[in-house]
Length: 138
Image 1 (cartoon, rainbow, N blue to C red):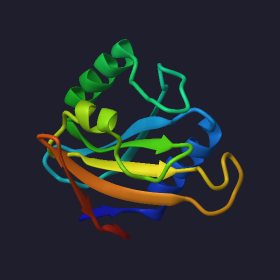
Image 2: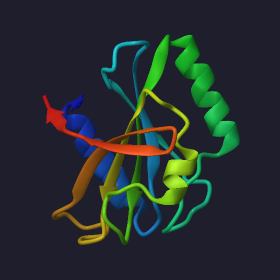
Image 3: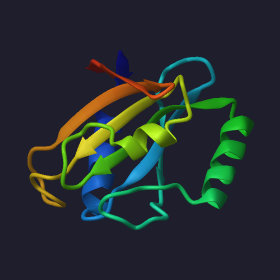
């Protein structure tokens, strides 16, 4: 189960709406080994695509150096889907390389960059296997 604050969910949703129609992506870091997401880190979708996201390699290197320096782990790795449900695509699964991370997807397909309903779901993705998990908002 992913336990996360409403404020962090609001930040992921706002980033997803802001970047729509392109997919948004980012990380929420937390103290190493804690499974507690605390620090929101929006990233740039280097692909600038409505159907695909990728982290810029230089940004990713900088992120992991920062996480190491702060003794943090990437607790949540999130991105948006702009035209489909909040379920990992084959590409999402292929790029899922953090076995302890929660992979959160936000679908903005109904409202785009406007206020309104959105779909948010969380998954564990390990060795290509997708397991949906409950989200507990605290």
